[in-house]
Every structure is written in C-alpha cells, then in structure tokens.
Length: 267
Image (cartoon, rainbow, N blue to C red):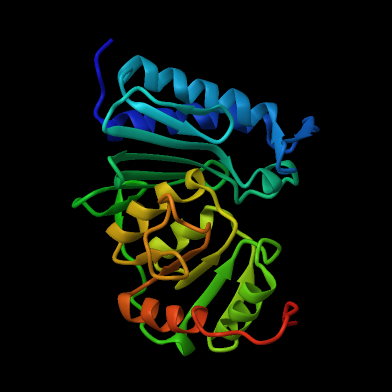
C-alpha cells in the first residue's frame, strides 16, 4: 500500500471516524463504565480500532497511544495519539460538540494535530511551521491581550479540585464572559478566534496532544496551570490555552495564586 503523508493520513482517519460515528449519533446506544467511571460506547471502540488499522497499514513501525485500546510501543521516535470520541458524555447525550482527535509527535514534540467535529463539518489541521487551517482556510486566534476583554470557556467544573475551582472562579471574575460546555470543539473555536481562554483539569494525554499544534500554529499559547508543557510525565492534567502570550501570562498569574478557602462554583 502506498504510504500517505501524515497529514493526508490524518484526514483519511478523520473521514473514517465520521463514517462510523454519524450512524450511532442520537441513537439509543449502549453505554458502559470504564474502570475510572468514565463512559465508553461501541462507537468509541469501533472508531479507534478503525483508526489503528489505518495507522498500521501506512506507518506500521510508529507507536500508537489511544484512549480505548492503550499503547502500542514499537521503539519508534514517532508516536500517534488518538482519541476516537473526545466528549463521549456529549455524544451519548445528543450534544454535537464531540470530536475526534489525532496527533503525531516526534519524541515529545508535537508535529501535527487534527480536531474533527463531525456534526458541524469543521476540521482543524495544523502542521508544525505551516499554520492552522479550518476546512482548508488559514485561521488565527483573536489576539486578545487583556483579561477584561476575554471570553473564557471550560468543558465542565467537575474535574476541578476545591483549590482549582477557587482559582478558576478568581479568573472568571476578571474576564468579559464565562461559559461551560464544548469538549474539544473549544480548542478549535479558540484557534479560529471565537473564544480567548480555555481552562481545563483532569485531562489525559489523548485529550490534549492534538490541541497543542492546532492552538500554537494559530498564534495561541497552551500549557498546564504552572506554565509547563502538557502531556509530559510530570503533567498534572491541567490545561490553559490562550489567544495570545500576554493573555496567557495574565491568566497564569491568577491560576497560580495562593488559595485559602474551599470554593464552590460561582453563580
């Protein structure tokens, strides 16, 4: 079989994921709980199996990390990280913000990221040094540089620890608008300039690696709440993504502040 370029293969993988996921969406699909209590469906597992098959056909010596079927280490410097359905809770609830995440990294450096949102027919693809494109068109972050002008999103507050929730609330009080919900769609919206801050916690490596290249190549910044790279061996699962370096520094200063009381979600 002719080997595709990584970007062409990622697009083919996303097309295959759409073909599997769309017939399941908004049907009464059976849901199981994994060991960590997170939900999983046959759509998750079938999609990841299909993506792995494509990878094995075109890059059989590359490593693979996936949410549903674990790691396949082959001693390569290249690793594909895939999440067949980011936002399974949304998927089983009929919410259209779920998507498929595909990334390729060399050693620990992300080279390419793809975020595909089947329901809205939007796909963000970024390659290192080549910018970020949404459906083929170059996109950029908003460039907002002040907290008071920023739109802040998070998928949900449940993963925040009490200390993290207090710091998130402190940040939310400083921005123009705060909203919840969105899953991986939020990273695409940030890359296209529609939102300005994304704050999450409790993430896994397959949740974030595709976002790194998509956001950075669009002009944004992404790190954990400590300003360190996401996805590494010492990463705590937190994420901050921002539309500009200046905005990122301001948000980090709030998220790194000392807390003294147990917080509840602000109304």
